[in-house]
Amino acid sequence: MRVWTLLLIVMVALWSVACGGGQAENESVSEEIPEYDIIRDEACQQGGVKARCMNITTSAKSEADFRLIMEEQRDENSGSEAVVVQFLEAKQGTPVSGGGYYFQDEVAARSILGPAYTDSDLNSIMEQDDGMLIISISDVASSMSQSASVRPETVTSSSPAAGEETTMEAMGNIALSGVMGENIETSSFDYRILDYFVTDNYYYLEDAYLDIAQDAFSKAGKFVVVNYSVTNTSPQNVEPNLGAVLHARSGDMVEVYEESSDVVHPASGLAGMELAPRQVGTSQFIFDVPEDVEPELVVVSLLDEIDEPISEAGAIDLTEQDPQGPRPEEILALQYEYANMYAWDQAYDLFAQQSKDQVTPEEYAKYQNASTLSITDYAFPSVEVQGNTATVDRVLTIGSSEGEEQNRRTQKLVLEDEGWRVLMRDEQIQEFSDG
Image (tube, rainbow, N blue to C red; front, top):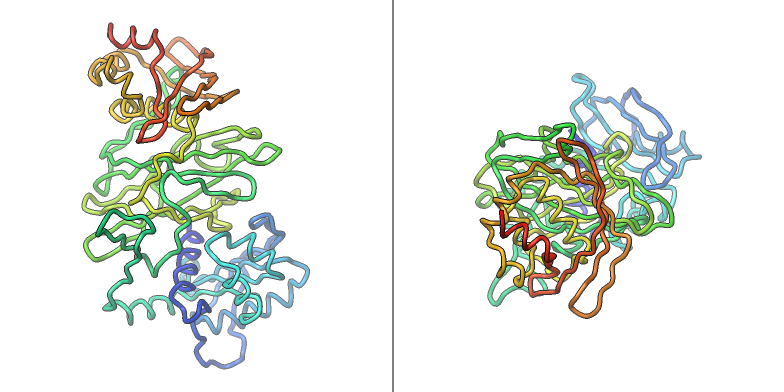
């Protein structure tokens, strides 16, 4: 369980609903430091910041008590740019009771906390709260219990359809970073939520030659599969490691779901994706959720080498979309993802209308089902856009039962109302039509 993901979300939510953007008011307690034991204490990297990471067990549960412990650890680790603490219940030893950050300066705070916190928020943390951000699960539960009967605030999108409103409620109103299709920047790469779809059976052919595939049915009701792209914007290789939680509505409630551990995209995790400068890759966040919930929001985090969150990387509205946002090569990569999933309807939808007029979805699916192929790697050495037409030079590594081979082709795309769409090459039209 990625406990730091949940703690970060709670921290963001509390900050949003607290008076004037500050933290919840501390209760009056003794200045005596509670008893505690440090069960993990090591140097770590958090958002590029040299920090001290700790797991502390204690019977204390309040934010005020946690603050006393944090102050002592701040003083004992004065050489660290940040101190990151996860508080655990003393008796059971593993249940998380809270968390805390100490930041030496505002630069460290910005690097670790990410875009969810405004400059005003960071200034408040550094000047009013002595560089500390602390959360108590017990205090959160009490606060949420008291406000359970309060109607959630309605936030109206900047460009909704006439008369429509979008309600964003999940442990408070989380500040949005964008909608599907919009580019989100981090320090070394950009990412973009391309789309999402729902299925009760997740299938992904990783390698046809080695016969490696993921095939699972939902245990909760349905899988929500969120496709995203990553583009390296730095001058060196990067290994993006992203995680996410899904906020989904069920009636008047918004529920929060972590990623499924039963099915995982092959490009997920620290070693799942390595990108050269300007290279594009794709992956998925996969959630197993009840049938009746409707996805509303995905909160993305940067993960460390053990898949623990180090900072939030944005909150994306799944109810709105910018179809003109994704670049031509991202749409082409998304079609390859759907091909590996044997999701022929979704792959077909990414063709241009001109191509759809020549090949039916049935013909396309029949042709694809007749062969067992997997796209194990791809690259786009060049992309040229002239007006509403794009020319993409692409290199594919394709696996089959006989082995792997590479091929290089030029693929054209055209810009339609729904965004960039793929034009079938002449030989593809012939192959698909013949079945």
